Length: 84
Image: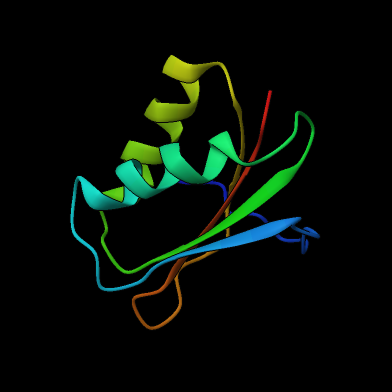
């Protein structure tokens, strides 16, 4: 069972990955994070179910903080990460 976020986070930037399939959300995420400062929060919007496992794994391998994911609504996944 997944514990979904129940509060809204204020993101410093939003990355729109709707309609993209693996590996493109991760590719775009890597590029976006290079433009962000440590401590900033990124909101990721995606429709590919793979982000549910890919984004936390990417955060672990890159030492960025995975904050969590809101409960998916109508096929839209909203995830939050913080740059280390």
